[in-house]
Length: 375
Image (cartoon, rainbow, N blue to C red):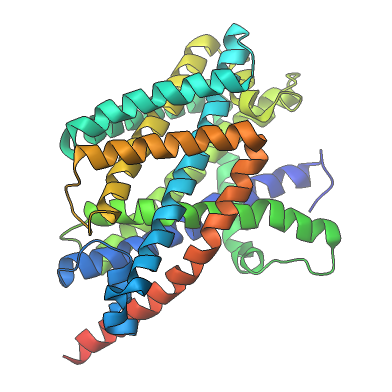
């Protein structure tokens, strides 16, 4: 890595961000979603992770081993979403602290988690066609509005130039970054563990949840259409997003703002403070973070209900409420016992066993496709 504070370090930062949020992340989601969609809609299997392994293990997936696979998927899902709820609570708390001077304390984060819980349970009660749909549309509208406003009010040319330059470097160095472990560099290997491995664990922990949800709404697509949609479009949108907000923050920092000196959860609001209509943008940012986590938690209750009712595409409201309460409780406990570090450790622990299941799912999918091709 380049020396901190140099232009080389700046270019590395955006390129590595592209790496952590780019095609690798969406490939993890897409793999799980594609396998689940194939076995659910092509072969009429229940929407359970264990059922995707039947081409490899046969009837063993109807015994204790299948139950174990589904339990691991449930644990990865609930820890992944609970961790994200914890991070979301700290960022909302950071925004309120920056804007209103509210203390950055556990009891404030607990109140935020309680408020989010009530809202996503109301949404969960109305079902997939209403609550999640309306929340998702609101979330996308707020994200689009905030993105366009930041792109226009921020250093537009600088953002687009940085995006183009970093995209080229990202594509060029993708193979090297994908296999980077830095075995002969103690600082380098620690950095890989703290950042890259953590991000992979985060995506893997979210994979059962996101994969099942994407599979649920992807019926009728071909494999080519599915992969194009899940790999290309979200990747490009994500990279544009990080270029816009990242480079706007860098420009503000270079113009005299002390964004780097702020806590991580306040950096976004510190950047908006140096924009025209900064207060409005900060309020929009808080609303976006809130709707994003409400939508995520709402969707997760649906997926957890689906995984614990033999793959039912319409889990009962009671089951969704139980899982909603559970994931909020876990988020609160993790924040209370160890803060962000506890959230990170729980995430990595939950992701590791499911990474093995992911590998087996891909082999099983390939075997099923080969068999179908011969027929």
